[in-house]
Image 1 (cartoon, rainbow, N blue to C red):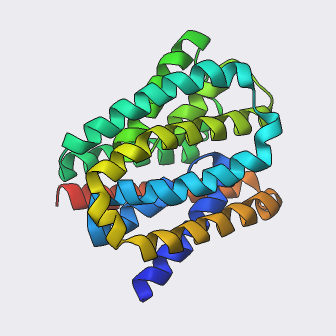
Image 2: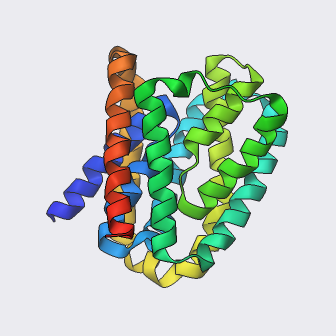
Length: 242
């Protein structure tokens, strides 16, 4: 019971953070859920509440999506997402945990140093980064940091940036989830109550984040997120290579 409550709190926190940063649900929930079911199943299970909460965020921001960028960037990300999900089927747990830990360290360091707001890819590099972000999204469910950095290369307004990043994440979720379901179906069925709880909590967190996070000083918020990601990265690294 205590573990389930912890999962729910983490899902609310992840949904709230994702409303502002574009990532958080997978980064926070996956390490915690892996304590119970292992990293491979955790990645697949978290994809469901991630898809639901991202779908809600997309609905709220749908009018701001830059369709021109989404058409090309979204397709490239989807290709990467499908390839990553297929690789996920063959990778072993220590490798997945190590990759996930590395991504958490990367994202956490960028947030703590403020570099996440300075990275700018050229448009050509951004297309490649779209494929890479999708690949990592399919492989370990963590893609938001690289996707956001890639989209900054297109120089769009803030609302369009957030909306287009959200729509891209939704596309990646849509192509990776059928692969997860095909490979982890029995495990996911047995986890239906937990997945349902996480989905509801992530939606609540998304709504809270949309309405309240703007009152929190951005510098304080981003540093807190960075510390959380670094701590989770260290935890995942310890679990992968104790």
